Image 1: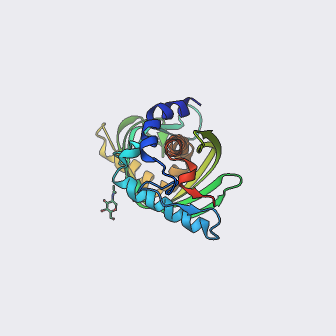
Image 2: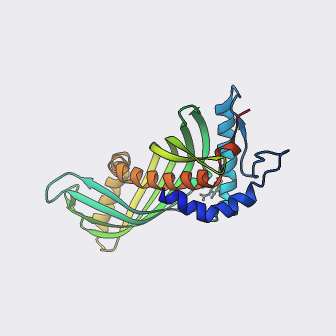
Image 3: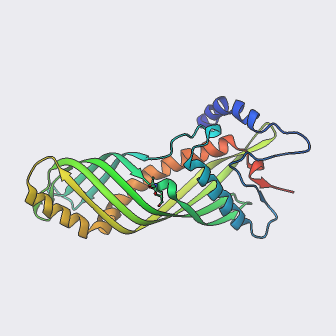
Length: 254
Ligand SMILES: *[C@@H]1O[C@H](CO)[C@@H](O)[C@H](O)[C@H]1NC(C)=O
């Protein structure tokens, strides 16, 4: 509710200028939107094209949506915990910057416009990340307490995002807002490592070897924390988009 009011203050002017509607060109879409017919038997293909059109424009920013810089994606904090007890390994990654997400392609859409449910599949060829980390505890039998820089290279990232929207009416138009959102992702190939502030080169090499040979397992442990942050980011993103672009401009319901 608070979000909608916020957007209305921010966006109603923008929306009003964007969507000046004349009788002849009802719901003429702005340049970053590809419209789909509700009756289209291939509507999912159309929505996929529409999503990719949006992605392409987002890469260069869309001032009408107050989106200027999309790279990098920032995440404040990601947690990792391995093992339990006083010697369990704990790490916190802060100020995570991920580059390359805007190179995504939408590879599939499934939709149900009656229940307002959507599932989008994404492919990102390459993501490069860097962060600061602090860790404590024991990893592969070495004291791994410390801190420093983390880097990661992720090849072949696939993600699926499901969301269910509710409709809110304002000024004879329909604004979708996210009711429920879920996601999952996988990475085909991971390379990552740390550069610690302590200079014990042998321990650092051992840790890096461990980190690299166990990339998938480590990612699995970090996943809940990453997902939580991505879900928040996506919810805000989708609500911003739908709060500014009414449903009628996406889907023509003849
Ligand atoms: C996006 O992909 C192109 C082509 O592969 C690449 O040159 C560019 O660096 C990528 N962008 C980012 C932010 O990684």
